[in-house]
Length: 462
Length: 178
Image (cartoon, rainbow over all chains, first blue to last red; front, side, top):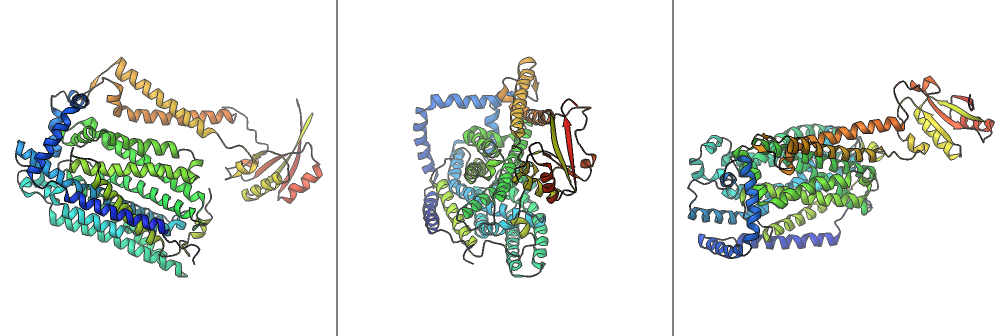
């Protein structure tokens, strides 16, 4: 019994609690220090003005160059600037000075909300992605993976707290995130009026509740069946799990698409991309498998799972490699079509990301594509734990940036900064994730018994 | 000078794998194995060095990528710049997103084709080449292990191979310049 039981090491537990407390303090600080009035914003702008004029000569050159590139390509002076305003300034009045300051105030007040959502969603999507991976193993009756079922179930134990937090954030963020919830704005906007049948607050909340119920109910029942299977002498529980997994995957693929429209795409309600849900899914899935590999390596190093061999690690690393490429493929497919067509209402999405977030935008490609492909290409390296850990760190940092770039440009525009609210939110949710997953892993023995494929999985060889 | 070999025929791949391991453990030298289909783990059991074809594939891929970059740069930027869809061809990096599908395809094309050609050359395969298989049944359902018998007692070796489960054993004598 005790041999394959996991307990969260006390140091790791302490660490997770400390960073949760630090994170909570930092997040509170972030919410409390946002400017409250236009006067505060004017002060900030005055301070920035003084700061800017010093380094303006140097910075000015680069900015002009990027702006000119879009303008020259389009053959129209000031095109990019116009498009950017359309992307970020969705408001009924004109672009007067007063409204500009109001707008800035709004963005500065939004920043702690965005910072919290980025970290909250990042860790929630890891649990959700592992749940999908788990469902795929059951639906495809995979023979190699049953030894990892308890580890997957441990990670998905974060889904319940994680998804509730994300849900609360998106419901209470209101116009901080979703301009379509601003009635004044919708009254003067024909496009938003056309979308009001879908993008309205009651339906938005109902959809969120449906996602949460569906995902968490599957997690609850599949875990229950999986544990029941360990105690039983027939395969009834396994069969139930197979059916539940098939229906969950159908449910997930639909709700994942609408979730990505609701929570991310509707932050810029004029913009749309048909590839968007898949793109979010790729990010979710590759991060999830990466965390699964990291957890497996952690448990293996403690000697708790002797039945998991380097062949299993090899397969997980193959998935990390493959889905990094898959993510890049979807990222590029979305980027190239929009870049090539250069339609004003579509291209705004990338103009703001390239002009204001250039380093993150292109750095993310190196972290998410170039590094994993080079580190994990060699077959033998996929079995070396520290190699996989290095690749995993690149992938996780890269996909955190990916989520950052989904949320920040659409909500705070160019008023972004990686400071206390962002770091605090990251710390808090990382601590919560470690704590919940560590506790979840320790609930039952890590060896799944009586699964019909467990023998095949333990003897897995290729 | 004559070289003597013993051909032992097996009827099952698991039996063959076991025989290969036993033969190697008894310090006999296996010069070749003929099978109707790839037997998993056989190359490792016979003691053949791991293939290096993956490395050549990577290098060919790099070559393909370079060819694509040079080609697109010459065609679209230097030789005949065109303004396509409002994107004039000023520099390579500005137009690069449009070239990436070509860069990808040529990387795969070079890696794939040159790897196959390398494989044929290393395996000494070419059109109209005569089959080297000593027994036609190894293309159907039999497995043949060829063991060097030059410095061994043939009687003893035969007995040994018989014990490993060979269904047929034959001694082959090859005269040089025959």
